[in-house]
Image 1 (cartoon, rainbow, N blue to C red):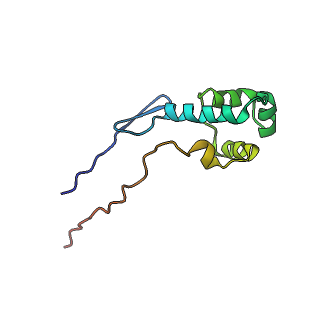
Image 2 (cartoon, one colour):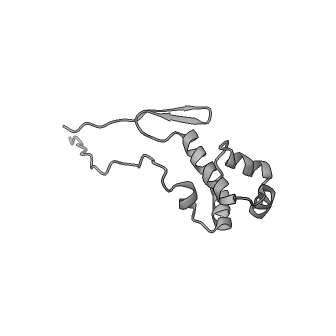
Image 3 (cartoon, rainbow, N blue to C red):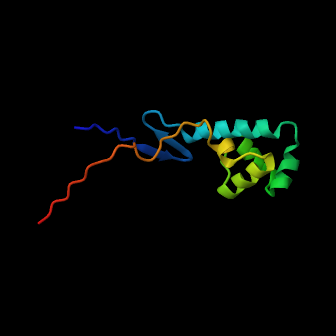
Length: 111
């Protein structure tokens, strides 16, 4: 008999909480925010926002871990900094993968 662990997710406001070892959305936002701040360095926020075609307040929210950019903005940010979306938004962030790599046996009753 195989034992499976099921993670139950509770969606509350903008936070995803999970049981057993999955990074919460708020933690992920902090990691991404730190990377964005590091990449921007001493370049003025206004300059980066203008180059990306977004508002200064939107960039500020990304850098303050209040929001995660939409996918099309992620692409613009990656291109601006000469990085991949993967490097900025996903590398090194633990996550739960779809599937466990274990096949599940399904039995179908036939008449």
